[in-house]
Image (tube, rainbow, N blue to C red):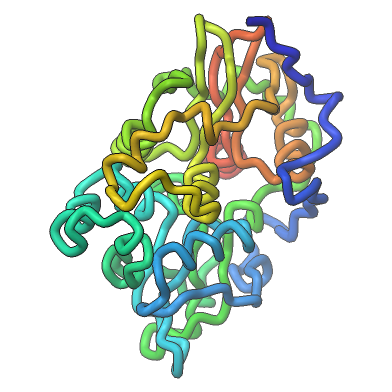
Length: 302
């Protein structure tokens, strides 16, 4: 099957929520974190149902949400999209479905986020942009809560990868210099449970979907969350729901880049589409993956 894969210059739209013009807020590499953070604190509480948290991630376009005390705003933990994948079958958190909910998927996806939330991770308002980027690149954190101080742990803002992304410009760096090889991929017939395992174990947010050596589509953490939001489940049994094939939820309109493009074009494409990564292709075949993390690592390298 030959794909009509759009080139960079052909991209005019974004996800189903529509194109999004992105303007970097970053003043310079040494700027303080409060200069770039969003003061619109998006959070959930420890009793928030898991499915509701997934929907909030989709609606606000973040992959990690702080879990805060409803009264004081004190940070209690973090719920990440990858934790939800873990719970859906990607890792040890999947055991909760069988242990606490008797394998009932419909009950499990409405469990409180406190069941699977991570330990607290944050920065206080005195830290700088490079501190945030260091965490994002080394620990694969796409969103970091910013707190007032170490004592109150009151969340006053969030900083995301897009907040610290540099302005679009000519980097004089080509895509091939920073892209990663396509180590992991999916086939259209792979089950969601297998995709979840691959993403959780390898700390990746997207998988190219390959058929006969050609790029057929891409499946991301967001697509998995959309599956939860849609609620079109086949049964109450977890195993049966997670046997859904990747081709039923994958994105077929794949945005791609080429090896010889400048990194600045990738930055601009991130802003126009809202996507955090792109397959690098040649004649319909995948040659690598480039992500927003790769861009940040290059921009802030010592």
